Image (cartoon, rainbow, N blue to C red; front, side, top):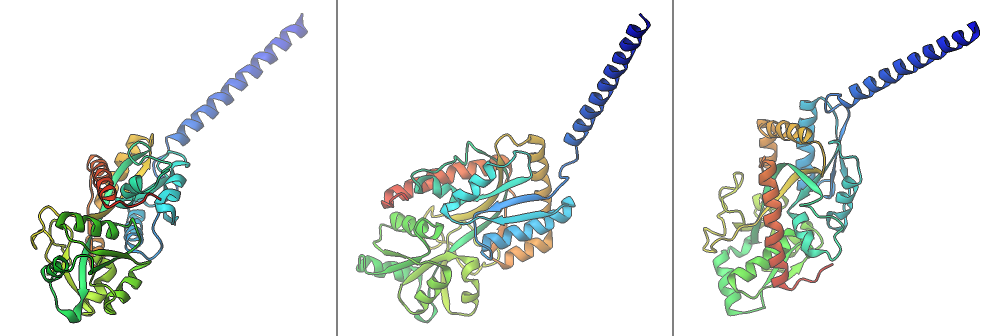
Amino acid sequence: MNNFLKIQEKNKAAILQFLLILIFLTSTQYSFSQAKYPSRPIKIVSPFATGTISDITLRTVGQKLGVRLNTQIVIENQTGAGGINAAKSVLSSAHDGYTLALLSNSTAISVSLFKNLSFDPLQDFSPVIGISDFTNVFASNYAKNQSLKTIMERAKSKPGELNIGTTAIGSSNHLTAALFKSMTGLNFTVIPYRSPSDLLIAIQRNDVDMIIQSYGAIKEAILNKQILPLGITSAKRNSSATQIPTLQELGIENFEVVSWNGLFAPKNTPREILAQLGTEISETLKDQDLVKKLNDLGVETRPLSQEELAYRMKSDITKWAKVINDAGIEKQ
């Protein structure tokens, strides 16, 4: 009998010990889960190549944001496939706010440009905050000293003979040319080039009559009077290029194309983390040193709210779907 009681006491002691360990582990796990965000580096996956305007913009913002959050912001470039690879990489990560995606108007274009897009930017991602806007510029050879009006008059008198140079098919610049043709009714031949540098060589050799490219990519050529800016595609003049009129000012009503970048997180990322990131990045974008650096690149900070960023993505998907369809651009 005494032995039985001793065994029972030992069992009780073992059970009590087990319960105490379980309580400790549970409370420890809870405390880890409640660790202040961010408690480790945040990775942002970008579909743009290193050294591009979008990449430099993201790294500039990331450096300032890292200081503000007291953590490292890691930029990972995953180029190719119209940004599909980068987006899929983020969607396959944990939805915990530590892996974000840089999406843009190129993402909106991809919805209609690719036959089998494996994600839906509206359904699979949650917007965090808009980061930046940058505008395209129409430009010609500086030595010709011509205006956009002159080029348009020539195109009208010689349908199909004048050329517009852009970057790759499906790029923002290429579709800007398609929209320009559609809205003016003019018949230009659009010639896509592999890179901005190839485009600059083409216009300086007079291989094309006009080019369309982001202001930041051709800013130096403009300042060095190698090419002549004719007009910008934003609704208002760019703050770092106030001398260049908008296409609307030049008589093309309602013409507006703005390239943009924004941060997105996988769907189901905790709302409080999205809100915190939005607030911290919004404050970061007010940094005057950052604003100046980006303005020097022809980039304007644009901290859109979650709702505004979602609306911009949705609007651009609709806009570029029509342009792609009207231009008869074949899906890839």
